[in-house]
Length: 393
Length: 144
Image 1 (cartoon, rainbow over the protein chains, first blue to last red):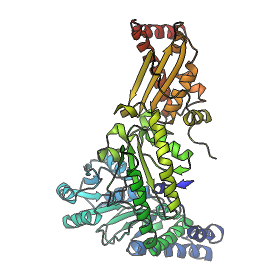
Image 2: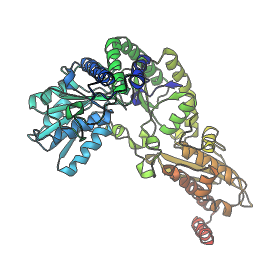
Image 3: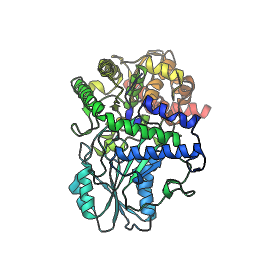
Image 4: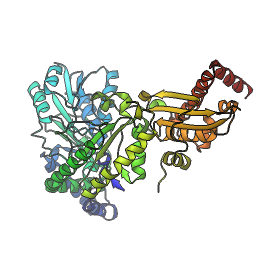
């Protein structure tokens, strides 16, 4: 199988897995148990990992809180910040293309009396920093805008958005889950106060993620219990996964300079190849400011799930923003909905159906891209022949 | 290999759709759905003088379940009399496919509706009132 759904998670690096295993078999102590060796070993390994993750995003170790996943990091950033009594203001600004874990979280806060502004994006998915400037009010408590959109690949002008927030004195959270390992992340250059990353998105294991909280920013924990993570996150730490995340951060920092140019090269080939194939294929997202190795598009006349299924039968794992494939395990069809990200960038909702995303990792090769370009024409042709809309033009 | 959300029958009909295409001299054509919902189903019928479905073809824009439902519906239709076509329910299509996920049942409903539309078009082409289809359908429902 050729794996092209790396925004959903990458294959863990073998070195990461190797580094994790002893924390299941030998150093299985609880890191809060400081008075015997296997507890202390776990603690020290976890703190070493914290240092690696901090260094990966140019932060200090004490600014890193480990969580279980990107969704938890985003929840902690938004709700934990608003929960802290030092912070006031009842207005939150996000963009209209945030991940569910920010969009849903913020939308639910309306019930608690918060007002939400969702900034519009242009047809390539970009938020205009001037729009943010205009939207900030006296009572704005928090701005949360993602770095990279996983569905359309667009990379925001995060540093400029951060500068607007700094000038206005408003706290700025960045969901960088789809960016880590693909774009360089420097929390100082990005002018952010909080930043979420998840290990599984940069060749680390599932089950470990982090929230950077800039020194001085007040956040309250969401889970009550013990003193773990200095009170930001009670509960026994997932030491093997955290150790894996640390190793993944170390590797990414050292080797991204090798992967990224290759991903950009393969992306260009895939983009140009698909673009020249059908005049009814339309790319989504920004061509220049996009996640390396990420290509997304929609095709007229054919539906996304069918395309996804055919590509899967031919050995390719991709993603679709199609309504039909959105939540196939749902109890009823009411839970099927076209992607709000695609609607926001102006793709007509009847067309979102045919959308497809291909996101590469450092493991993809020239052969993979050649193979995709080989099977796409026959696959699309087959579905077109079946479509009652194809010959109507 | 791990099983996906669809039954083997659904996958078979998705990969090898039966009766896919158009009938140039069809005497009943029905189209239902709309692209905004992600599905459009079009059925072409050839009904002979004995009111038997001699040939049927389909074209579908939709997900795996929509394609398999259309394909299975056509298999169940060939050689059937008009009354039998109207008695064909979405549940019969679901059963023949060894089930569909709950969120995809609407695909089989669309197939039933497409048959109905095609038959209305057939009666209309013969100069009859298409409402006869609704009457026949109501009668069949009552009898069951």
